[in-house]
Length: 374
Image (cartoon, rainbow, N blue to C red; front, side, top):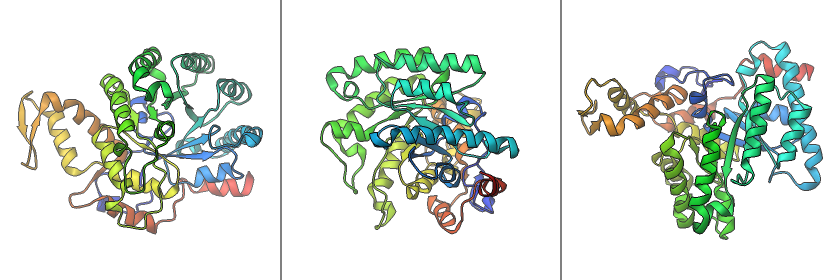
């Protein structure tokens, strides 16, 4: 899998092209590779086709809020059938699992985790997303998945979602976050990233941001996000940005709340973003590409023989090696995944090419095999 693999002449856009990655990539690289992560309800009729045809590099099969209670049994069967199909195809198509999106399952409850682990080899699964993660119940998910990984020589990751009243309420927040952090620290090798449930947080306070606003304009939600960043980011946890439910961009994208929200996500150090509509995918991913100026600054900081201040390559700012080192390291890491834009190129150049492409996962014989065999 590679970001923007639909661009036929990447050298015209990228100073450095995105690198390939897969399910078996190094955890540090993988944790920064989710980009625009799209959610799909597990009750879809064509789950396999839909997932393998999407332009996202990471997909969540949701068994929680997106599935009605009366459709849950069929949704669970869909998931099991989906992984059976992946297993069949992987035995006939070489490198198949290296060329499909990173796949995650969002669970409804702990018993559902046990059922899935018991009834399927879950071939091609990257990990589980745990909604409404709490200190009181979260440890059992980690311990169960860790035991499964050891017994089956697997590396299934865990992505907890922070979205409960205990986290958003100021009176309990810090104690709850520290308790959650203690659990995550124990199983840090399994934590791919931490996700923020902005919609659940907003619902608790009867709030919903309008099309022209960002999640950071909701003061109580912004306050909570900043505390999450403060407590977890210092220890190297990768934190993903919450979903924005608006996707019909009839006005200039540059002036939309969605555009400004992504910029604020990046500014605050969030990596990747949950999305719920295909039109959001390319916008989020294109805005995550590293600019040439950012890359050259980061490269200079990482390669500096001095630990003091140095003038930037563009001679428009001061780079301080010590305080900017972590930023530089993260920027170089992101540049490997998302690439580096050529000077003068912007996200709009990528979007223009994406609008002209007919996305097809590589290799193309995967889809042909599905049409003919599955």
